[in-house]
Amino acid sequence: MNAYVEKFINQLIKKIDKPESVELECGIRITDHAYRWYFALNNSTKTALHQTLESIAYLNIHYQRKVALGAFKHIEHIQITDGHKLLESLGVIPQADEIKVSLRHLEAAVFNVPWWDNMKLEIARAWLSNKTFCSVDRNQADRLFDAMKVIEWIVQLPVSVFVPDIRTLSAMLYGNSKKLECKSFSGLIRKLMLPYIDDDVVDVLDDGTKLLEYFGISKYPIPMRFKANGLLHCRGVIDLSALHYGIGVSPDEVKGIVWGKRPLYVLFIENRASFERYVREIDDLGMIIYTAGFPSRSWVHVIEIIIAELRRETPIYHWGDRDAGGYRILAFLAKRLDIDIQPYLMGVEAEVLTQADDELVDKPVVELMQALESAKHYPAILTLYRDLEKLQIKKLPWIEQERIDPISPQK
Image 1: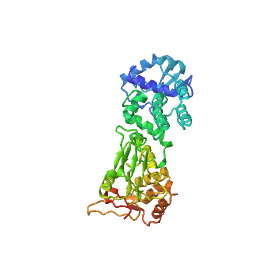
Image 2: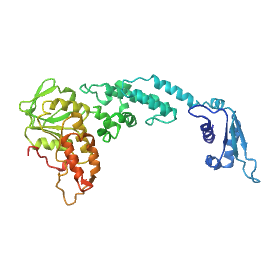
Image 3: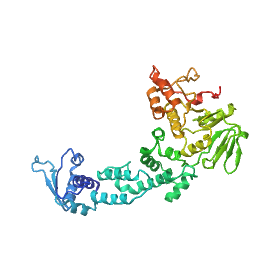
Image 4: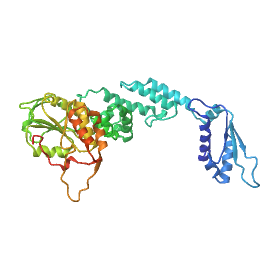
């Protein structure tokens, strides 16, 4: 079957092969609107096409009755006499049959994920309407189920348990060490999980790789960095006061911390460069924690362990960019840790020294307020929200924290 015959037949099939059933009989007009490409063919190609169509059972071909002398006689109308037998003769599986098989596989699929049953209903509705679900059609059910395998693993894994690197986990789940590194596959995982992830995180996890990293799944797991004076309990005891620039540890190793002298404050720092500058330039009794932007859930678990004895009496600050992203991280940490975190060097009064040729980028105040919306029941964040609300201007200059010299909250 040549390409033109196949194209013509496929257009005919679309008229009779519906998601709910196959039409037994159907008359189809061949118009120059729907079949423009057919009328544009040269006459010899059309003649060959006609001959092939006439040889196909269950198709009755009707040509134009009235044509100008010497003009080519085009197909005007085609009658399909038995849709089921036509599809069978062409080796085409009806959509309705495909849908039934796909729905049986879907119904049989079981994943220990809280939202799976509701998602199954949404998938079934999409496939019954001949649509995709998260860009997965009914013939790609195995791909969807593979994505659900890692989602189930993520949902069931306690945050304190060791997370293998991405290739080890991929080999463990699929027998293929590089499957989870495939951008289209991790992108599908992201699409399936997005409706069930905290709103503060959604806008930042803009690809599948970042989502997996948020759950601690990466090629090279990143040690958590912090600086403090205390005894860190892991497999053994580490005296943190001996380390001027802090320590990096695997999150699953941290068991607890004992304070000789309690920190004067806790400061979360969003940016790595700012963290490195701070721990080198400021040497006081502060507890400094690098969050790497949005900290992964295993990092949040360690932060909870570290600040457990500090959360009620020690002032806690967050230093990040003055933009929507920085404010979302502030809101996220406040909610995840359920503590009142004070924004530091990122309020409306914050300023940064600029060079004459620096180009300031303005950020809409309304976007900054929206980023704080979900956490404005915490007093410090509510204060910042109201400061933004009172502004007479619609935009504030974006402040990257790297452009600000480190200053201790104690000063």
